Image (cartoon, rainbow, N blue to C red; front, side, top):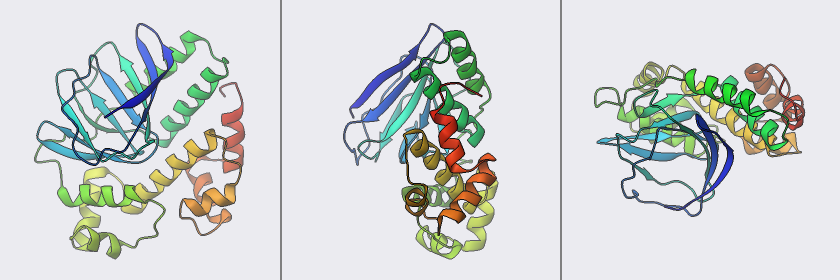
Length: 257
């Protein structure tokens, strides 16, 4: 599995790289071990990860802690899938899946944008990135007793196409689970509703597209599964406290606010 890597920032305590998958890989990769602790933050598309005997989904709402003490494998990432990789000098958490809230995603994008514009000095960037890392803790230890297969199937199903307007019954049918049981288990294991998770994915993808310079808010709204520009704007404002056009302006600005 070949990733194209570009260094965005490098220091003794923390590094920041952009990893882009060269080509799709439908089967499990060979086992890997990282040379030092890593925190991987997917920006686009989902993929599967295996740590030891446990397999689970990583998507743009997730963060993946990797440790040199544990080998891992990846499966089914899409060609062109992009992730930010933060390299660390010490192990802060055991390997596992974590959750990065939308506020953390905004901070990450602002840091990347300011660094690209040479509008932030190394000390401030290091402190902001380290603060982001230290604010995250794995929400799941991913032992056999904590991985719920129907929840993972639902997570994978939604992340495969978050633009779909599936109902609870549609998702439950797709993952072979009762709607009542799935809704209860999903909230118990992820801390959010199915709708909340889908919206988290949509907002994360929207944030990445806006930082990349997306000009048409209406087209972005429809691509993400919203019924209209207005529907998307209401959801975006609820998530970030501002309209998509204002967020785009903020991300284009060279200075952090």
